[in-house]
Image 1 (cartoon, rainbow over the protein chains, first blue to last red):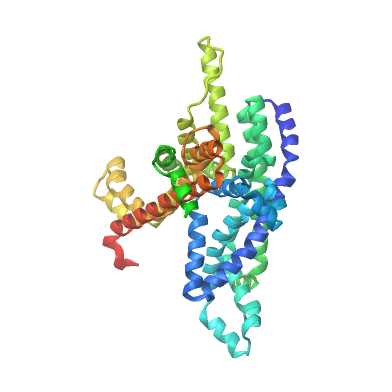
Image 2 (tube, rainbow over the protein chains, first blue to last red):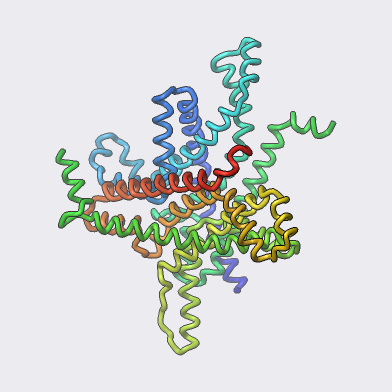
Length: 232
Length: 241
């Protein structure tokens, strides 16, 4: 163990941290929006909607993320001229956007199942009560269904966020130099795998620690009705 | 039609087809996943024993293990075993006067990395399952005078396994998908073989798509298998829930 070397490693790896966070935040936000749409189609879309969403979830949960990333980055590169004609080549040319797209599509599959579970856990009485008060449509969804569903889905959603932070490491395989990419390069250069692993691992654990604390705060903030019961 | 014909020629079993190689590689994916999963079961069981131990030190160590291995990207663990293992072998080699580079065998790296990571997940599954086993059954085993090992083999393990099967199914799917990461060490499993094929034919889309389909087939089959096992092992207790 060489503390000086580890400190240098830490400083090097830290320069990859913004990219890791950027990948994670972008794909989690985009993935959640997509997942909500998919969950809504699954719940309200009837037979066709359910079949479509089931197929989507099966494909993206059943195959490795790395293969999906390769398919998007290298595979779509084969259709360069077609994509240029469509005017989207600038997007698929960049490994960064390909990684974001793969992460987004992948997390959307996992999250949509979480959201679907949350939406289906909203009890019919609560919806009936809202209808009795004269709410319907978007208002009912925005004020009653969504907030309750979010509370149900939050713990599982937190796990998914942590999985996503870990999954951003795969972007290093398609040449993106985020924390794991830098760590891999350092290990290949210096062969001091153990020390670098400790430093890189500590960075990821720190991110995940912050994420879990933030989720705890959100959960606390979303459940005042549970707190009241505990105090009395 | 022409498109389909050229695709089938590419991944088929003909003279220029990659079919046989892709299937062999898929078998390698399954092989390394099974070995890694079993290694994970062994390590995971030990971790569970530590989690359930009366000593705080053991519990703390087990807690550290599961927190770290579940919080760190798997790719880093693979790098650790691949490069760390090579460095370790090299230092052993230099003890015997050999100063060259000794590469870590890729299959062993894969098995170790998958085993160590999945052990953390399996330990949590086993712990949860152990908690769901009715206390009375284990007490009954002690009451009839079973020694620890027969009690574990004949009472605790079968009961825990029954509750653990759904969780183990999830972990197996995880291991299967994680095995794709082993391709970075050069082990010719499904993803690596697709990369090789894509590189030499300049048709990455077809090959990665085929890889996705093959992975889907494997995960689909294994989910059916685990569902069968679940119904089989819960036959006697269906009415209880």
